Length: 121
Image (cartoon, rainbow, N blue to C red; front, side, top):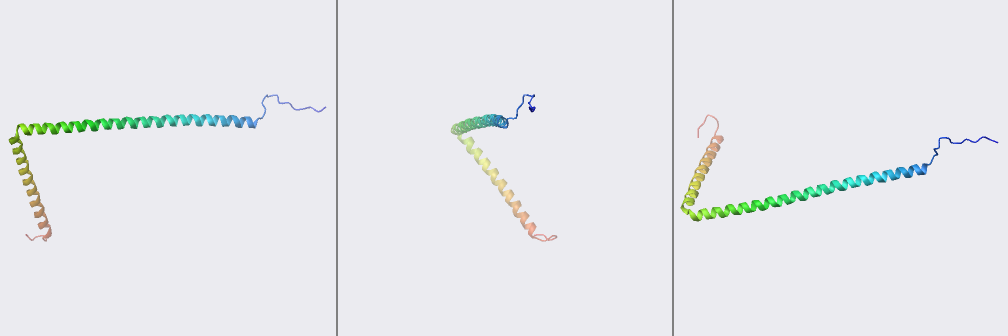
């Protein structure tokens, strides 16, 4: 009789089983990654919706405040029309003086720039 070699370690080579176990591990890992990406995407969408709602509320408040200011101005102008006519006249005169001063300086600077040095215009 010929002696036979017996595996005493209890471990047998099963390449098909090892490949199947690896495949299951990869699928489980991919599933976990997919769930994480789904959660991240859901959080991003939720944050975007929250930011959009906040922006809409802020726009509504701004619109209401602007309308309130317009109504208050109309009310004050109706109560004290001469005061606001005088105010508008004063602002108009000041703007006219400032624009005249700026335009005079601009023409003076361009006339000095066109003459050679040492000569006066």
